[in-house]
Amino acid sequence: MTRHESFAVTEISDKEMVLATDLDGTFLGGTEQDRKDFYAWIENNRHRVGLIFVTGRDPGFIRETVRAGVPKPDYVIGDVGTTIAEFDHDGFVAPIAELEAEIAKAWGNANAKVENALMKIKGLARQSSAFRYRVSYDLDAKEFDQEALDIVAQLGLDALVSDNRFFDVLPKGVSKGPSLLRLLASLGIENSRTLVAGDTLNDLSMLELGLPSVAVGGSEPGLVEKLQGQQHVHCATGVGVSGIAEAILKHGLLTQA
Image 1: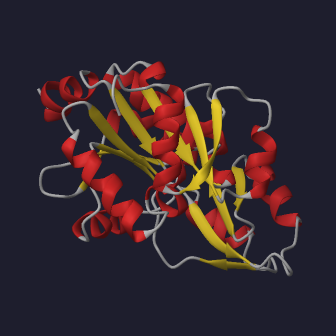
Image 2: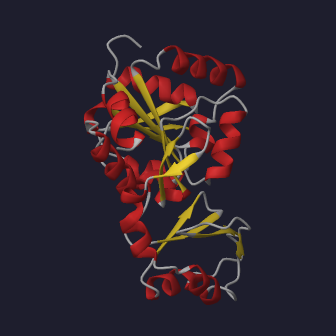
């Protein structure tokens, strides 16, 4: 029996609330004092608050961020939903093979195929990090050729543009939202006890799930526009972590926050 089965699952499923949060602009956003206060609150409430990072960042960045003093997550959904992992006792992001199997199959070792197909597209600069089930680019909005979207579709994959400066190629049907649902189901966590937090369009798939959600203050305008009228989403005035704290109270997720 693995630790994923015998220890971590029971621990987080017993907690009163689980925060599933993006990093940049969200859990890492807000003033220095806001972050200090919110991180201290997280640490003081570990017995009742679970923490899942849901981010476009890679495992190396997540590990270094925690080493720098950010509260360690219980679990990680990284690489825009293509990594589903535990954050183990040694401080490593440890992928959960059974939860990633469908992701790997949908990707099918497409890295080289994607890079070759997009090689001559203007406005894209491939990011240097080597990802397992995605290819990511920095995007120059002024130069970007929309043909890239058609090329990715013809490859049977999904393209995601976020913050008007990032372009991700992902397995068909894979993003933050579906991966979060897969993880929550495997852990036995009720959706109604999970607060989802984000700030850019690559968070849209998880903010639209119907779970208690927050688009923190300063969110990408395109994201806020798409979330209009969705009653489960609180559009916060507070930036970063202060927006998350605002939403915990708004949604009434803890008996006493």
